[in-house]
Every structure is written in C-alpha cells, then in structure tokens.
Image 1 (cartoon, rainbow, N blue to C red):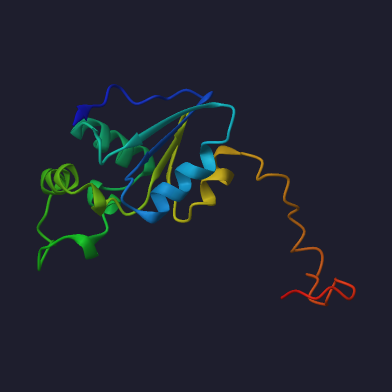
Image 2 (spheres, helix red, strand yellow):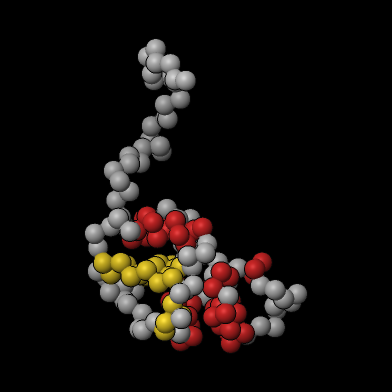
Length: 150
C-alpha cells in the first residue's frame, strides 16, 4: 500500500477519498471521471491515508474520526470506549468501514451520502438534465403514438 502525501486544498482540484469496494464510492468516482477539472481520486483500498490526514479530514467536517466509520461493519460488541487511535487503527486496517466517500475542494470537506451528491458538492453540471420537478409536474401519460414494443 502506498502512503498518501499532503491533502490537496486547491479550489481548482477535486479530491475524492473512497473505497473501491463500496458501491457509493465507486459510483461517486464514476460520476466524476467525466469532468474536465483536475481530479485526485484516492482509493483507500490501495493507498494509505496517514493518521494525521484522517484527523485533519474529521476536523474539517467538525466531527470525530469515529464518525467517519460505519459502526455496523466493526466487529466489536461495544465501541463506546474507543478513542481516536482505536478508530484510526480500524480505518487503516479495514478500508471498507469508511461510511461514505469524502469529497474535498479547497476549504470544503464533506462526506457524500449518495453518489449523485458528489456532483452537487463539486458544482458539476449533471449532463444537462433539467431540474424542473419542483416547478413542473412529471409526465406520466403515454407519450408514444402507436409504437409496439416486443
């Protein structure tokens, strides 16, 4: 596993920290691979993120390191006594416990709950899709004329 350098905090670069072994992580990455801006994708299944960087990420989001972890994936009966060092050891050795991918752009850092949220976070145009559902009713009537599909 490679060690990762300093976290990029550049407004012109998008950084996505994810695990390639999670659905949300791989989907978030696929949404971003088509953008023209600079993208740094860090797959924690292949690249180790330093403990100090995890601490920096948690601090930037105003949470604890343990909050980055899906507790349901931790094989421990009671995690109430775990401190930051315990959570770091778990995260370093079990990349799949990262609850959601982490997006970084300049001074903004956020966990991505749904893959499509990554587009909103980075302000990426979502392929020209109209966002009119809140102002127009959806078309639910049949719009084809006489076509028969087998």
